[in-house]
Length: 141
Image 1 (tube, helix red, strand yellow):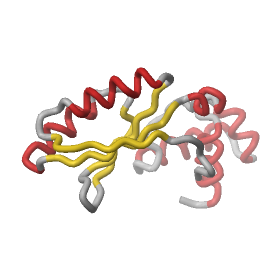
Image 2 (spheres, rainbow, N blue to C red; image 1 turned 30 degrees about the horizontal axis):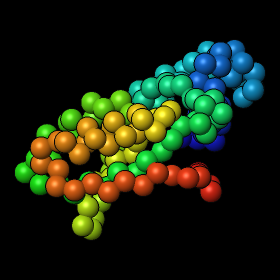
Image 3 (cartoon, rainbow, N blue to C red; image 1 turned 180 degrees about the horizontal axis):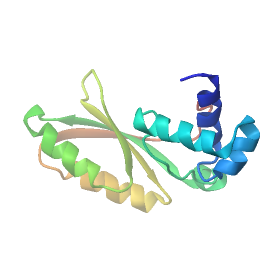
């Protein structure tokens, strides 16, 4: 990826819906050149898709919980498949230590968090969970 591609990717990260005409104007390129560059970035697997970004006020209203999960390794694949189906779970990390996974849960209410924690805790093969609610984010990169 050259400098122009990097600038294009940064512009798309800021606004994935920006027209190729506007992108071309900002980059000092023709619209067809920008279209070609985007197609090349997609073909190379650098751009895998386009998504939405939530409004910062909405993001800040969400309650975040980190759920440490200790499980029976024999059930790991089934548990991971079930966790993937829970809409409020935004990420699951495999970790070292006495816990095996950490699930990142984001919800609008404590009731939704509580219900999700209950759902996780009832899964066969989960031995123990410990949850922490995030009180504030000091910084995030």
